[in-house]
Length: 327
Image (tube, rainbow, N blue to C red; front, side, top):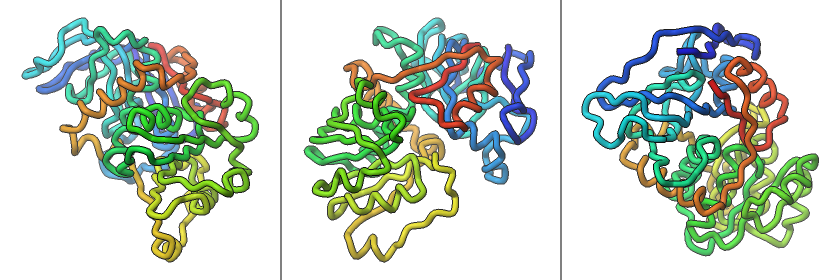
C-alpha cells in the first residue's frame, strides 16, 4: 500500500509517501480500500509534537489519519456485520494512525455502513465522524434538551459545522453561529441550519439580549471566557478544541459556581474507544443529520502526496469545511 508517513515531529515538510506492506485485519477488525481520508486539526497537533509525551499516541515514523471512507477489503476473524465490497466510513478512535494510506485497518465497531444511504463517500468522511462526535457531545455531555438554544463558535469548521444539524435533530429551538469577520459572507450562504451567523469579534454586543443553554467552543482562548457572558443559568459550554492555539488560557472558576455555569471538555478520540457500545447510536444519529441534508459541508480533495500542503492550509486557518486526501 501507499501511505503518507510522518518521519519526525515538526513542520508540514516531515511527510514522505512510502510503499508499505498491505496490513492484515486481526480479530474484530476490517481492512478498507481507502477512497478518501479526512485531515483534522488533531492530526496537525500530533504531527507538531504537542502530544509527543502522551501515552497511546504514535511516535515517528507513523501514518496519521483518524477517519476514512472506502470499501471493505477483508474481514478479520469474528466480524459478521459487514461484507467484502461494502461501502463504509469510520468514526474517530484513538491512536491517529493508518488513515493517510491506500489501505486502512480499523476496529469493526468503529465502522458504519453507507450501503443504501445515498450519501457520497467524500461527504460521509468529511461530515459523519464529526457529526457522530457532535451527537455524543450533545447527548452524553451537554445533555441537550428539547427546545434549548445553542451557540456554535467557529461555525464553518469541520467539527463545528456538524453541530447545528445534529442539534436540530435533537430538538434545539435556536442555533446561532459565530465566525471570523472574513468568513461572514461565506457563512451566510453556507446552507447550514443556523438561524443566523455573526462575527466572532462582536458576538457579545450582537447577543446582548440573548442567552444560550449550550455553547460549542472549538476555538478556545479569550473567546471561551467571553462566551460566559451569553450563557443562560445552568448553561453548559463544551470545549471541543483549541484552534486559537492558546494553551495557557484559563477560566475563573468562581464565576462558574456563582453564575450556575459549567465548562465541560470532550475529546471523542479518548472517549469512544472505551464506550464502543455507543458507536452504533452515534453513527445512526449522525447519518440522520447528513441524509436529511442538515450538514452541507464544503470539501477540498488533494492527492496523498499533498498531505503536507493540507496541514499547511489548516495551520494557516485557510480551511472552511474539511480537506480530504485521495490515495
